[in-house]
Amino acid sequence: MSLKSLFRSLSLVLVGLIAIGFVFSSGSTEDEATVVSPRGGEISKFNPDEFGVIPVPSRVWRIGVMEKSLINDFWLDVKNGYENAARDYGVEVEIFAAPSEGDLQVQANTMEDMLGKKFDILCVSPITDTNLLGPLAKATQLGIPIINSIDAHITPANQEKHSIEIEAFITVDFKENTRLSVEYLAEVLGSEGGKIIHIMGIPGGAAAEDRKSGYEEEIVNYPQLENVGIFNGDWDRKKAMDVTADVLQAHPDLRAIAAANDNMALGAFQAVKNAGLEDQVIITGVDSIPDAITSILNDEVNATTAFFQYGLAYASIEAAILILEGQFEGKPAIIYGPQEIWNSANVADKVDEYREMYVGLQNM
Image (cartoon, rainbow, N blue to C red; front, side):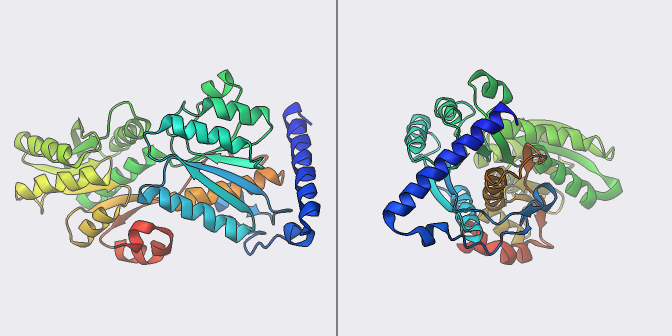
């Protein structure tokens, strides 16, 4: 047994003894020992190939979750994923978040407070790659396993520098977001092809750069597509509209736009509509936000790449159970959630299928 594994085993024994002490003092031994797990012993709901069967938890594990914030639909969807998975597998989850995605220090302070709650494992979505390094280093010192869940990534370099042990990174392949967009556009345009552009997010950001790379890597597979440029839209609808208007002045025969998010796709559509070219230019976005779905249903924006934030949170609970039950060995250290293209042919069915999971779809 490695020193890491031995240390973790001793830590879990200690946590178990503390929990037993609590049970006896509360007089609720039977209730605390009972694990109600309707899904335990079944194949992973969202990651069957990577996780296989998720065991029935041997006890009611306590899982601490730190989200970026809870002020938009995306992170509320994540919250729902955590809570529903915890209910399904019979474990406990307690969720914390910063007031907004700009409150880096508040998130770090809250993370420090979480360490005193003696969770069995942590699922953490840092606001940036670095703002939680201090408390996460302390978590490792305390022997608490950590899952880096969704979005900002504690890099291997920072893990080594700060002595942080990350068991798994549950995320989405941002390159695949735009690979799927280009694949879809190539399919719709067929052998005729035509001119295409990519509108990217803020340069330097991980999601923006990866989506740009995915576009560049995929477009070389389709010689019929002529890439006439990559333009900054900075995730902003108005800027994407202005960029698209300028491109259409220079390339009135433009056939396709792969935008790095739905807001920019919606801005691009407005420019295309202003130019009277709705029947010529095909537009894709990423994120499957309600405004984009409505636009697709109205035959405006053509498609969006949906990646399942609910499923990423759900998978984080599954990974936590596998780790705590000693069954994570041999599983991939980075787990990518599924994603797919939603377009006019399938979007109505997708809304019905996933409505219960997503706050934005419930409000449509």
